[in-house]
Image 1 (cartoon, rainbow, N blue to C red):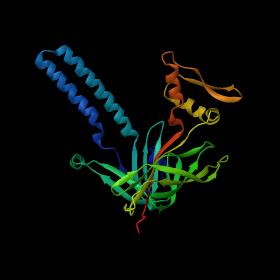
Image 2: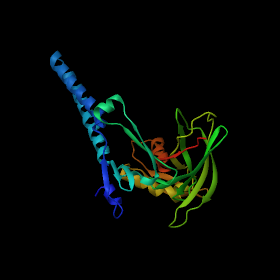
Image 3: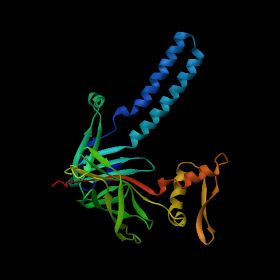
Image 4: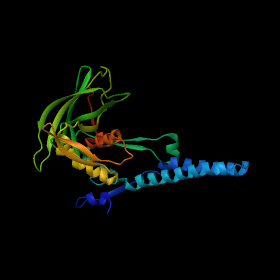
Length: 304
């Protein structure tokens, strides 16, 4: 069963299904063309042995590229129902975006000249300030206002655990300009309890907005929410998730927790002989384990 069918609510109808355009195979097509050209060149010049090796290398790369892109295309689902927009990609590490129809403020379509000829482009669904859910995190932008040369936005998001979650990356877009220079001030915090997620609300202050900037069509995008782990968090929160991900990827690293100066500390107990300690450590403490990526986009009209 597809992801879209599994999340349909009673009475909800799928109006349109979308998919990635075949242009995503362009790397594989280019590599395949190069393989054919080198093979033909070798045949025409008598350098068959050398050119056949080069052609074979490009051919293998073309097959690998084709399979990789095919898998991405196969695991990506796009649907418009009579109630919401649904976007999902990924297989083991799944990323989803769902926006209710009453929260859609607009749809941006970007097409190059080649895109218009071949009928492909980039579609961006822009939501209003209401709640949006992506990767299991609900984010909402309650209000936005201008204060001199800065624009302030109140943003609230759900907390899945007791880590110190905060907005990691965000941007402000308005006609003719964009800014990712912002500060964050926590307004309220409701800690999660057993069986119930918490909530944190921050005021984002985007700086150096010109006084004459056109803010009638203002878009605030939260790109990522993250929680920089403390040493003790690895054992209490992150180690099971890290170990599971390593196992799923076939990485033979084993983790364990032990007492170091009275603090439970995550340690690597075994790793492949071909992997250095530094390489293993980089895999284990990668920010992918404590970063949740959106985007969550909201539009406001701050025109006078």
